Image (spheres, rainbow over the protein chains, first blue to last red):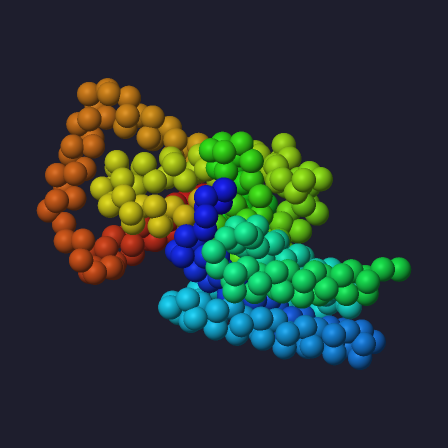
Length: 146
Length: 180
């Protein structure tokens, strides 16, 4: 589902639907991480995780709206297992950076596919999301620095 | 005593086994595997794959190069190939011997492929090799079993007949235990 051919409407919608699932799942992961924090990190890191959760759900909403504008509607099927474990702040952030990078990669791939194509609105949307997700990842990586 | 605790001693969880097998199958088919490929193969999010792979990389089962292409370590490859072989053997046994429909056999083996011990898988392989050997006894056995099966009623489980059979098997087990 990639290559130099112009992106079809079906492929664009499939990629957007995948992103919709990425964002909602990431939001749930943030919530789970925030309540699973232990120690003093509960005071410092929980706020960051909950803010990220809100932003992530906002992104999901934006992706869903984009699909609606394209004449489709998003579907959602998640297979999510979140273990019962108490996490310290660093470990929670290390997990967060994994799924944030995954979402960033997915937006980057979408941008590559729509870059220079006919759908300027979708291209700008993908570009804006890449910028936002890059910022997200960079901020978490900064928090993880010694 | 129920041996449910053995589930926890399995080398990999159900989800982890699927990740290892997906990587092996992608490497076989395309020569490369990325997080996005594994996610599409398994029908889950990239985030989920990334989080699971973190654990598998930590255990030395999965590798990732600087271009973020995935690979399997020797141990990872051995586990993946083992799970794939168990699935094929058990599925064929369910279909060939028991007459289970292909799709159902696929679903059922998916649930147990990573849980079945090497010993049971080896014995199942021997049974399948015998059934497929072309030996007259094997053909006669398969045919007789199918004939017997046709007379039964597969609707509803367990039937009274099956419950009685289960009780009989349990009794035999207890008697054998007492004799020992």
